[in-house]
Amino acid sequence: MTDRVRLYTADEFERFVVLPENAEKALELIRGEIVEKPMPTEEHGNIVDNASLPIRLHLKQNRLGRGGPEIRYHAPDDPHTTLMPDWSFRLGIVEPPISDGAVQGMPDFALEVQSPGDRLAALREKARICLRHGVKLVWLTLPRQRVVEVYWADGSEEVYTVEDTLTFGDLLPGLQIPVRDLFAF
Image 1: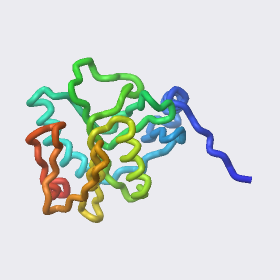
Image 2: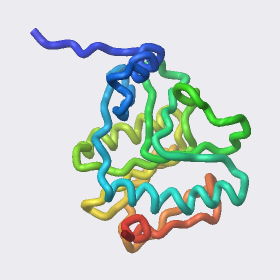
Image 3: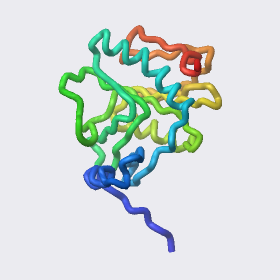
Image 4: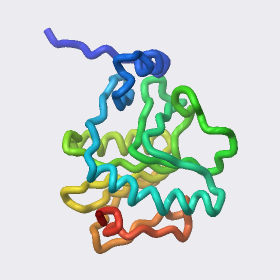
């Protein structure tokens, strides 16, 4: 007899994440299953900072939208998916930030940095789930290999090394970030 995993809806998940025993946990809902993100390391945090700083400045200077770390997003077309990228942004946002619960909708861009406890196959699947729900661009940063896997909404995928420069296509025209800068500590 196999054990069946209980599948949750986004509404049930929202009630679950606010329980006191879950206050210090980074949780996501992936296809109805509650998944705890691994504890990030200093390296992980530095990579997120190095990637997000130029993006945040570009967004703010050009009044294009806003972004931030660990924002929860609920996929409105899927009652079983609530994701929390390591860093993300949404374009064209004018309403005040959400102060309770998940953003209803998905970001335009999502950044994930592999932590020691992350399985690469699971991160790649998460990138594809993001794209299926409307995310236009996903960067999957792999510190041990010092590469960034780039996933586009059109289905194309590329791998960038420390010799390459990342771009945002039509999302943020003109913004470029050398991969080497992500790993500059």
